[in-house]
Length: 93
Image (cartoon, rainbow, N blue to C red; front, side, top):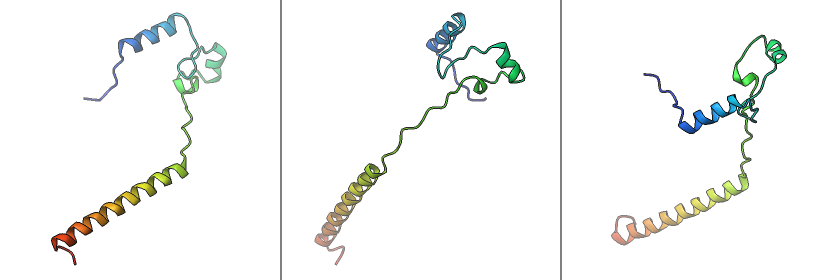
């Protein structure tokens, strides 16, 4: 069986409200004119009319590197603590 998304009641409500009231909603719906449809060779694929692209938030690489450095320091500290415990137990020399 193919895994398909199911519409929630609020999705159905939003769709019907948009259609009934002929709303153009950014990144959701578009009221295409007959001229637009003709220009697109009667192609009704949604991406031709509705741009759903959203910019991704820029990643702060300096912040991420700082986080990595902190984790590396914690790992080094944990490794040293573990090595000390092994020495106390006589497992390591």
